[in-house]
Amino acid sequence: MLKQIPECPVEMTLQLIGNKWKILIIRDLLTGTKRFHELMSSLHGISQKVLTSNLRDMEKADLVSRQVYAEVPPRVEYSLTETGWSLKSVLDSMSTWGTAYKKTLNTP
Image (cartoon, rainbow, N blue to C red):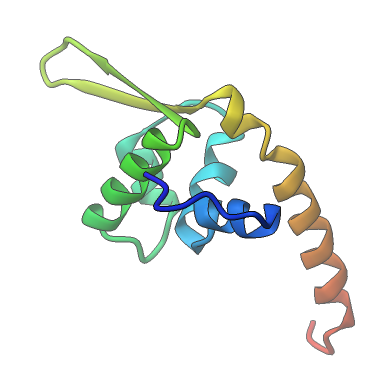
């Protein structure tokens, strides 16, 4: 998965979650386990191919777990791993910063 482990911890974090879709997938999974279509519905503008690719990358990085149920039709659920949950504080900080920044803007 990782081409090279960077020395800089910020670069390491960005290598794992450095695109908007991965951050938003984590945001959605922080509220609990989701099925693929639930993620598709909440991530406006993402294609099925991009969501699949990001979930696979996150699974390889041990951020997300994928559970397949032997049903017809098959049911697949995604949830955060312990490592994925450890990113909650990062997203909380981003949320706090974003809220404060929005207050500095002169828009209603």
